[in-house]
Length: 117
Image (cartoon, rainbow, N blue to C red; front, side, top):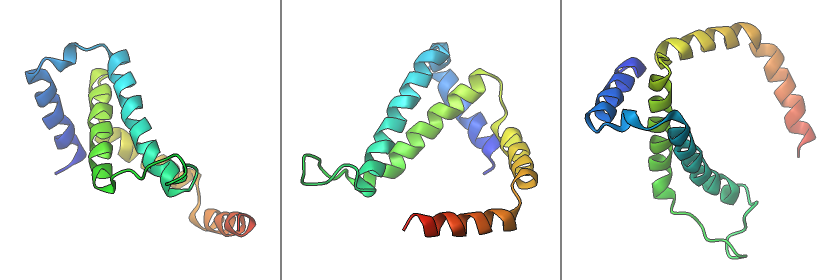
């Protein structure tokens, strides 16, 4: 399934439930909430929130669902503003390919990684 097809499927799902009546600001706030839930996994994984020292480990089986929820809200916002995400993503990928040369970035990241250990 292509991204365009996924976006159309979600558009239908949203319209059938009249969720397209929600203002973009509320959908965006909900998206931020879902991203915040993903951040919980990241902060535990990277040790910023230490499990057993005031923080509990999140149930990792729920992480995929959090990404899916955030993605569905992102799709809803894109549709609200008439953005064809597949087209936009492919165009952005091409621009990034031209803007960020592979070899230069590999060399930079090697240097960056050495400085962080």
